[in-house]
Amino acid sequence: MSYKIAVLAGDGIGPEIVAQARKVIDAIAEKFDHQFEYTEALIGASAINVHGNPYPDETHELCMNSDAVLFGAIGDPKYDNDPNAKVRPEQGLLAMRQKLGLYANLRPLEPFKALLHKSPLKTELLEGVDFLCIRELTGGIYFGRPQGRSEDGQTAYDTCVYTAEEVERIVRLGFEFAGKRRKKLTVVDKANVLATSRLWREIAQKLEPEYPQIEVEYMFVDNAAMQIITWPKRFDVMVTENMFGDILTDEASVISGSLGMLPSASIGIHTSIFEPIHGSYPQAAGKNIANPCATVLSAAMMLDHAFGLKMEAALVRLAVEKSIEANFVTEDLAEGGKAFSTSEVGDWLVNFIKENSL
Image (tube, rainbow, N blue to C red; front, side, top):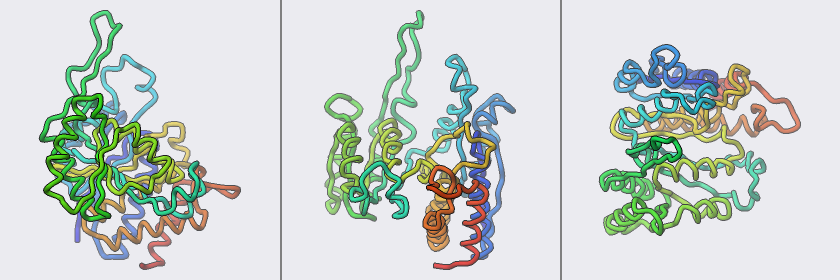
């Protein structure tokens, strides 16, 4: 089979970690006789530097005409430290999500046993943790209008906006994923305070009778933040709005032992995007020290969800697991031994794939 992959490496460590994911995909192609055609394009700060636009039209056209998008990271201190910048790298990410209709971000959390001791949580709290957070991605406060500041500059405002249609499609997706897993759905909101959250709860309750096999619970976001730390194994599928999902999944990342281990997929109307959840980590850019595993695991999600190559995806995940067990890891995971470079970890994963089968 032949597949077209748009490669948006982005900023910071993006090019380095995406390069390792491509090496792994190429090893899969060779082993299983697939063909992957890569086409690169700019996004984020790198696109601003060339085009003045963080998500150029040509990048969008490439994404639309590809079978999947492999994405690195965006962000640059040049823009982070300038509160008056009119154009920012992050605007490219938001534009990409909106134009591609990527309304759902899937963030699975299933820690590798070899990393449980790296988490700040007790091991007994982590054993058996396996949940999926589905974050709404194109609505809420990140996209709400009006947005801005008063004429005197002393008041700033953002608006959180959701339509019933936006809420129903993401909650329905949560029910469908729960049906494929352990049949439990947690709807996270702040319905005791926010009107948008009350809309979320109303629509979720309306949908409940259509999925009688699913156990549904409703949880305020502050309680959910506590439960992720005190009893994470209680969750199966969690669905929530944009900003809540952004915060909760970064909190949940500590369970895995490193932010550099968590993959994600953004799915919706058009081409799906597969990316690590961490940022551009500019302090490490060009140093060949960043952990590539989240990007490699995102590539595994791409093989599975976008292309239906489940065996290939499983072999990639096994390679990552075995690299951790062998302590062949980057500095964020190294303990008392040598820390290996980004590219060395990538090479190890490639060799494992070439020499092993499921």
